[in-house]
Image 1 (spheres, rainbow, N blue to C red):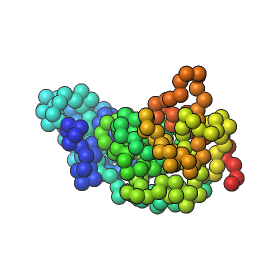
Image 2: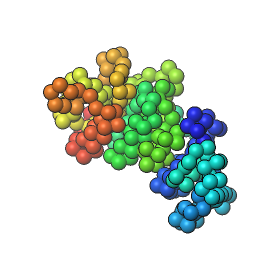
Image 3: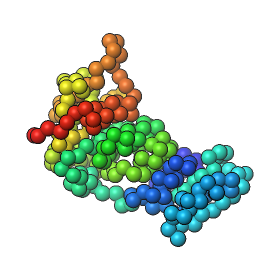
Length: 252
């Protein structure tokens, strides 16, 4: 179960730890396939085991055996194999959202810690969905799921196809894109929320492309003099909190 071995396994993914496995057992978006538990952890998961469909096997093993199966010492002692559902297109996902909706749109996010943090913020502040461009890493990678505290198993997401125009897809479904940039034309505090709003974030360092920034409404987070950057997950948390609680939806 080395990190490099966990991608592209016929729609399967690995979930780790009690909190995440509890989320997996109750998620409407993904399905548990099997559990592997250290014997000393099985009793604490009895209620989760009772929730599982009858055809989901649960295996227990001593810690030494579990470490040998996994390939390294896995002190959490709780693993599950899950299967992802058929992923909708970005347009299909956006089309099915309510008239008043908030989505998080990610471009070039390649770090699994950041991806997990972004999904955690999306869940915490009530974003309805997450849209990924083709260059983003997999939200159902084991580390991303763990950092998200299971939010990656609960929050609907879809990936844009190669060559799809991110802003065109959003605007076709009535979403106003807000592109975050240190040089944004509007301060976040002065930014109102449209009925359908999309928060667009790029990778740390390169950020969003110049071409995209030229076509979207750009927003900045004011900071102390001499500093103009935040971790991308922190940025998402600040912006989503503002839009969820401070900014009221306004008519187009």
